[in-house]
Image (cartoon, rainbow, N blue to C red; front, side):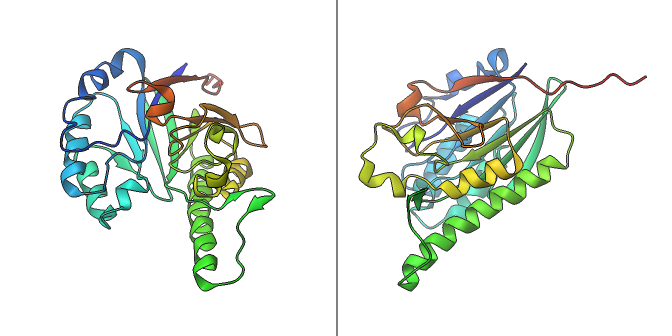
Length: 247
C-alpha cells in the first residue's frame, strides 16, 4: 500500500515559520511522499517562499509541489520555484516526476491549472482577445498535464497521480458560491486526466469546497485545501499495481 500525504493552501507568511514543521516531521511514520497543491504563500514573495522552504527542507520523504495563484501574485513564480527546489521540492508545471519510496515508484504529473468552468457552463475561445487568452491559457495548462501524464504512462510506475491547484471537477467545489465555479477550475484538466488515466487527482484552491469528487472517467479527485481537510495534511492509501515475479 502506497501512502500519499497531501495538502494545499497553507498560505504561509512571515509569521508562519515553524507552524507545520512539527507535523511534517511525522511524515515518515505515515506517508511515503508529500504533495503540496499550491497556494503555499500568501502573496508569492520570495520572503514567504523561504518560510515554506524552511518548513520542508531536509524532510525524510520526497516533496512534490505545484504553485497556486497566490504564489504568482508578486510576479515571481520562477524565483519562488527556485527557492522551493533549493529546499528539495520537485516543483512541477506541465512536467512529471517519479519518486521512489519504500521500493514503490510513485509518478506525479503536475500543473497549476486555471479556470474556465465545467461542461455546460464554461468559457469558450470567442470574442475579445483577453477572453480568448483566458481560455487558451487554461488549455495550455491542461495540455501540459496531459503531456506529463503520457510521460508517466511510458514509465514503470506503481501509481500515477495528477497534482493541480485548480480543480478538474465541479464535485469538490460544493459549498463554494456557484457564481465563482469558473474561477476555481476547468473541465479541461479532467479531460486530460481521463484521456491517459490516473490513480488519484489532488487539488486545492476551493477553501469552502468538499474533499471528495470523481472525474467522469472514474478517477478519484480529492480537494486537499487546508481549510477543507482541517489538518496539516491528509494521507491517502493507494494500492500499487501487482507485479509478476520474474522467473
